Image (cartoon, rainbow, N blue to C red; front, side, top):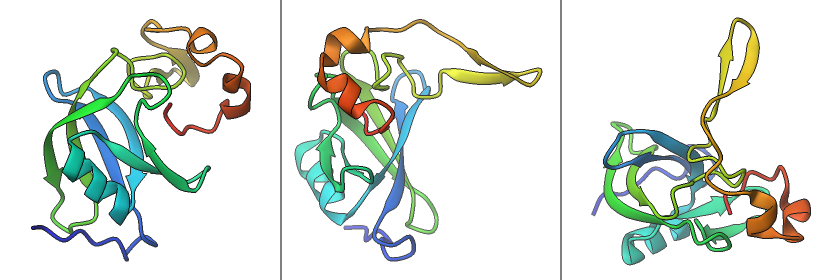
Length: 137
């Protein structure tokens, strides 16, 4: 088994989630050793929430889980590219398919794409508590 270098960045490694069919970058999060082990064991992406200081199963609240299809590890063993099937069509807790739905054009920040779901309807009253945390419900 490949051993990741969790020590280089204080126990965490960046993990980029990418659509396994289209190659679209969906999100970036962090994994610690435990979330990495759970991901490998279950085939469902689990990450470390830096804001909540706990492991979270991607899509645990929204149902938009990430089924792992392939994992690639960089040359330094300290960064992951996880190719996933994004269940529910959206990786971003704001309702967009990708967390990278904003683009800078001519110095302006523009939104590209349509929301897949309404976060207020999906998360209800917890939305206001979690808003802006970026922990990927």
